[in-house]
Image (cartoon, rainbow over all chains, first blue to last red; front, top):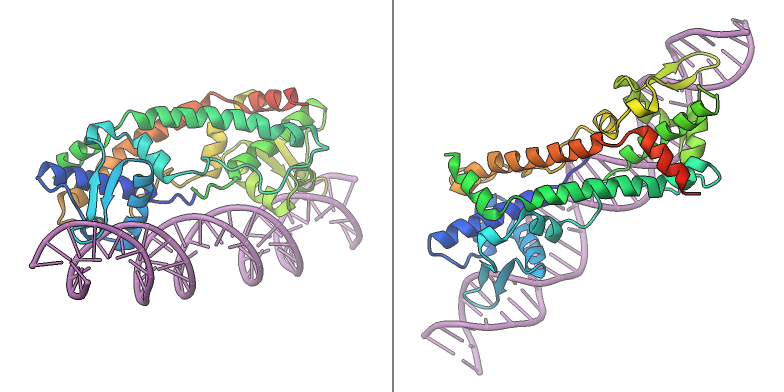
Amino acid sequence: MAANSRLTIAAHALAWMALSQQRGQDLLTSDQVAASVNTNPVIIRRSLGDLRRAGLVDVRHGAGAGWSLARSPQDITMLDVYDAVEQDPLFAMHRTEPNLECPVGRGIRPALGGVYGEIEQALRRELQRTTIADVLRETLRVR
Amino acid sequence: MAANSRLTIAAHALAWMALSQQRGQDLLTSDQVAASVNTNPVIIRRSLGDLRRAGLVDVRHGAGAGWSLARSPQDITMLDVYDAVEQDPLFAMHRTEPNLECPVGRGIRPALGGVYGEIEQALRRELQRTTIADVLRETLRVR
DNA sequence: CTTGTCGCAACAGTTTCTGTTACAACAGGG
DNA sequence: CCCTGTTGTAACAGAAACTGTTGCGACAAG
């Protein structure tokens, strides 16, 4: 499906911030997060920017700047992260409008829209069941 | 997410084939299906080719060639279609390997793998609840 | 043998994603 | 008030995926 890795990057960043918080370091720079994710700091700033707009993290500017969690890790669900970094629907409709003179072409979009809507709801219910605290716990179990 | 429209195209083609079958026309050419979907016949042949490899449709070559359903519409679920046309996982991992010297970088992939696996299972359960016969019925309800 | 259709390769245009560089804006500390 | 380090964002590049198009060989029914 040509899936992107935004949810993965954002969850990784949040899990790392949660662990750093546990260790007493509340504030991390995009450089420090990028070092764990192994990517460019601008990628991290873009991702954390999405999370900031969703109210999941706070940012401080100027000297001594950096990022911190806006909520405790067990209060951030994967659904919160998903909503922060994804906007497109899971399944796309036709790029070009189907033939409206065909009964199937006329009705297929609302029909599939209903099906796709229910599927997204199931996805959201499942995403909501896991928090960043859960992800961090599972992450540290593998050592 | 840069979602593609393959599931939509395939479901549209199957619904149209199901309706044609009801009307007494078992065999459709890719041109006829393309006319309803409003796209190029090669796109339809590619999609129906996926469905043929999955055993959902049959094809006949030579003169008088065309496509027909291999099963009755109520025995084809959206999960069958999904498996036929999609292969990539829903959410991608990091493009580049995370920093393995960081405890989060080391454990994040299996941790997220577990989460993503459960989400895909939920998606699959939901896809399985809808058949092509359901899609066609809903499609014809909108007129 | 003719004809109509499929299978598939090759290619182009568009879009998305990731990564990179560059630089202005900002704010804390001396 | 200036220095310094960090964020925010624009601009750009390369790679990949998706859709669409053309062309042509393979195939089989009549």
